[in-house]
Image (cartoon, rainbow, N blue to C red; front, side, top):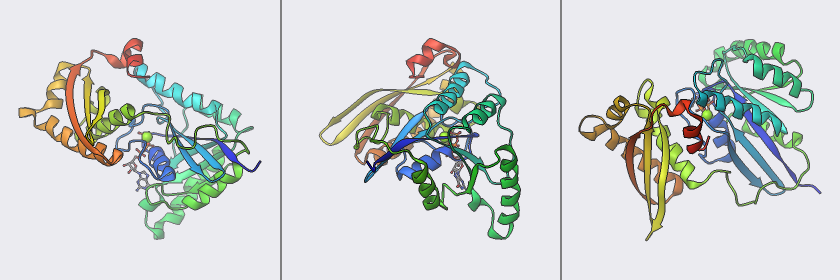
Length: 298
Ligand SMILES: Nc1nc2c(ncn2[C@@H]2O[C@H](COP(=O)(O)OP(=O)(O)OP(=O)(O)O)[C@@H](O)[C@H]2O)c(=O)[nH]1
Ligand SMILES: [Mg+2]
């Protein structure tokens, strides 16, 4: 058998470019990206199918030093879970940053390293001009070398696809011989409702400030195609009434803008004409309630 297939699990600090990397490898935007930390809240699988090759990528939330609510705790459990089924771990870090891995993950990684290859990716190398890059790169590589001696370290830019071919070669070599785990047509373990929720959430991250993006969760209730148009209706849940007022804005200006940009992005995701309806509801303290979180698919 010369088929290769396996799980390539992506972990790392918030905002380092994990989701950007997943999308770059898949060449499709399955995971949302924003310039704010804690954008990704779920473990999302993306599947790359090639001739005699299937790579299952897993995107995860970023490491948190301190968990402030139950949602955070669940997010951190997703990271731990992703250690269990990994064939390869990609630890995404950022050029010129020297963070400490939270102790719970650090211990796990040290143990795992004996069995599973960990590749350390130093992302965002495009951010610094070539004339200064070498020096900072040297320092960053040194930092990770001390923490994970003998692990491979590869500088990349997920955004600009720098060293993507090199990374893909490394992944291919390390993947086990195995038949595909998923049907070859499947792109993700998530359904259309999830992608709609996430795109709306991405736009909320883009257009609202402070705690608003962190206090919202989306639930798409309706998704139906009629005569070449997909009609979608989604509810935005916030934690407090004051947040609902901000979300809607004066004369509904904010929510109209959100609807416009969400619809535009959902249209390009599905490549179909979309009609989107948005509603805002208060769902008190949902981030600290297991039952409510379960309702949202956590
Ligand atoms: N310049 C540059 N920016 C990048 C690169 N990769 C990601 N970014 C930017 O970094 C920010 C965070 O990217 P994400 O992919 O959302 O990061 P993440 O690690 O998934 O973040 P969380 O889900 O919040 O943990 C976005 O603004 C990206 O455009 C890169 O290679 N170069
Ligand atoms: Mg992410």
